[in-house]
Image (tube, rainbow, N blue to C red; front, side, top):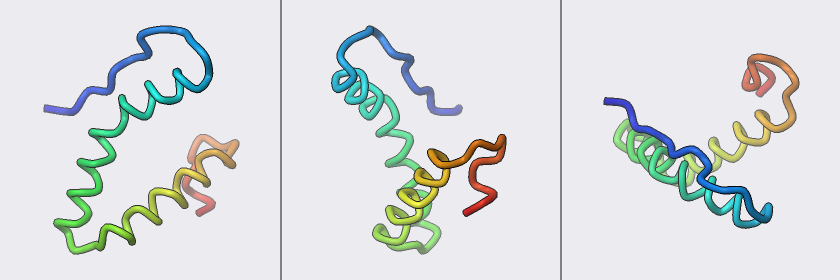
Length: 69
């Protein structure tokens, strides 16, 4: 069974909307972190990789946002 991510429940200030998004994706990110650690990566290595990939995703205009990383 695939984990589901909740859709936004309300419109609000940008801050509350961002907090709701963080709450929605946190379980999936923690699951990915745990899987990577089980595979042998350190928590710090995984967190840094997530940050770099997120930055690439924000900067990318292509359909494959991680290709340039």
